[in-house]
Figure (cartoon, rainbow, N blue to C red):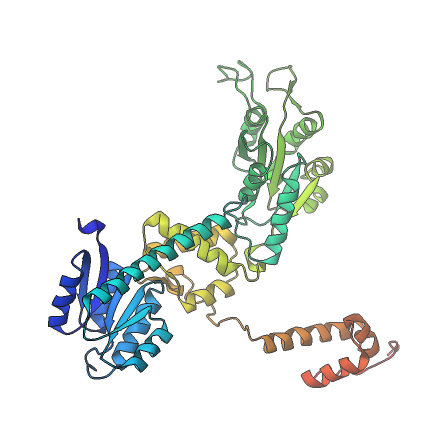
Length: 460
């Protein structure tokens, strides 16, 4: 029965009032604490949706300082918890202050059980409504680009391209560093296309030995080689009607590149050991973390194949270039990790947030996901710290978000670059910046920039 009861934390040092409140809320699972430390311990252990808290707590039972400190810490640990503060008769000023600090409501002694039950029941209802609202918001945010968190401008641009390209059958090339989410975007191209109900077949060209890759892709006839005891369809045939994803195509052997090129041109396959041309209707998506231009120059990748696979080319930015998106992605990954491991983690500490923003993330999204999963397992508190993430040595300086200072940095950098382009000619620099010459002089004086204005460069 206790599993179905609503939990209520009562923070009260008066034994008589504790008993009265237990009786008043007999239909709840009442947990009692007498001071700040025990209240925070019970909060962490039981995570009650509603807390009844007296403002007069020991060791300051006659004052309210300890009560306010307890209130602030409860809300810091569990922001969604509804805290109802109980004050002395006529102490409306402190009650209003408590609400200003984030308390849900207040109630004055002496206790009227009927009124208090009404306030507490309403708090439970509001808490339940907020949870439901959060669930609905998450569902509404869920898009066909499921699993892709696009908070930075560069990733938003990638998603716009995906949405435009997906309904077509254009062969698409995804370029990006390892761990940037190329396969996730390939799935998005498939799921947003008319082929979404057909197979999505992925093959990693770097993970399969060269001797086996051809038969994996094109299939083979019975007796084609030792061990070929039956006719077997290749990945291309299996993907008929759907999408074929060729990951790490930059690692495909040159000999096989020629056969893939013929398939892309003719849209027919020949199984290994066979002569029959089998038509296949498939949308091809390729991905690589290599510089294909360099591969072409080195003779490791066919230029004509490159042109075939890159009807549409999408460049995926590394995580370090996704300004404003790293924390949003981290919070999304944290939510998934806590659900996976059954942990109740409320978020990241300030040092963790700063570390996430300042760390270079050489392994990109895959590295972030692994670090967060490990942190969720190792975290001892309700928030993940930089130490939990293994980023304790990372610069934990919060990013400078003061608009005045940011504007100074950006304008100084732009003016300096414009002057460099203009060879320190202020008139020309003003044209590059799209402002008047007097305005540029004002900004240079404001920021202490003092180039020597010159005409055409002299021979000296």
